[in-house]
Amino acid sequence: MRIGDAKQTYEADEAIWTTSTQKFWFGLSLLFLLVFPFMADSYLLYLGCLVGIAVISTTGLNILTGFTGLISLGQAGFMGVGAYTVAWLSVNTGLPFPVTLLLAGFMAAAVGILVGLPSLRVKGLYLAIATLAASVFLHFIFAEWESVTGGMGGLSLEPAHLFGWSFQSDFMMYFVIVPLAVLMVLAAANVFRTRIGRAFIAIRDRDISAEILGIDLLRYKLMSFALSSFYAGIAGGLFAYFYRVVTPESFPLSMSIFYLAAVIVGGMGNLLGGILGAAFMTLVPEALKLLTSALTPFYPNAPVFMSPMLEIIFGALIVGFLIFEPHGLAEIWHRIRRFFHLWPFKN
Image (tube, rainbow, N blue to C red; front, side, top):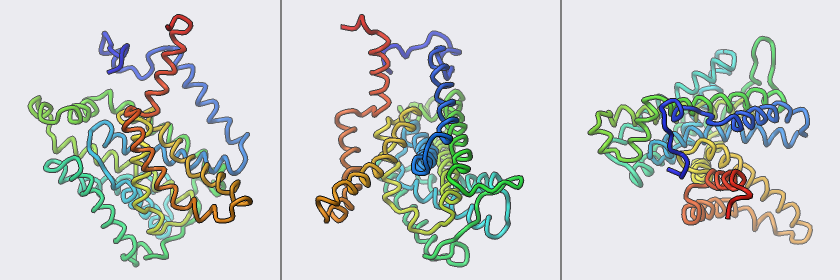
């Protein structure tokens, strides 16, 4: 716990915003998100949609890894379940996208519960390996169950539609993805004001003590897996509607590493950290592309040299933040806030 975080009442401890300044900045952020698509070009809109999808999936993984202490390398697989659920339902039923998205979340949650069953017996590295095996198994199903998934060719789907509206452009999808991201982050914040969220944190801090206090470890661990996978399923469904094609190669192992890196870089157990980490890690590949384009006129082999750099950078960021800033970007942001809060009286 950081200095100044202690609360004197339950109401203060459960409050999402503790000061009027926080409410002001939240409102200003919402205003910025509302105005942004009318000012941004197509490339920035594309990035905004990608960041929104990443925020949803990272928030889900943060619930599992950051708040419950269960390491998972299966986020890409759960997103794939959501994406294929949306694609299959869109192709075969024609349901409106809110229904298909909800069903995608529930399908991913069901798979997450099955994957989470070993979590009572194994944890740490062994649980990470178990979730990695589950992701590999799901990737095998995506590639081989051709009658449902279309095999390696994947599935193509029509744009999201609702009440006669068709969400074909990035501009239209922005108003689906970003509001959903905001709502799901707020929902996650409210989860940790409840008994369920407190149980997650107790399991992370000391699972044996939590069990002695009467917390059913298996029940709450499975709930954490289900909730995290639900978020991943929603993110995967939005991914499918955004690109309008789903293939097994859309959800490689590197995507799971990407989201784990986003949680670590942003700050585990901190919802703001999930947002910052998702945005930062989404923009890193784009920055590399811009750097490659700038270097190509002077160094023609730059694309060949830079192509493997993404995985190296992800690994370096994980190791670097674990060593030098284990609380991630969220802690850096809190330090900046404290500095300006105390300035000019800070020594």
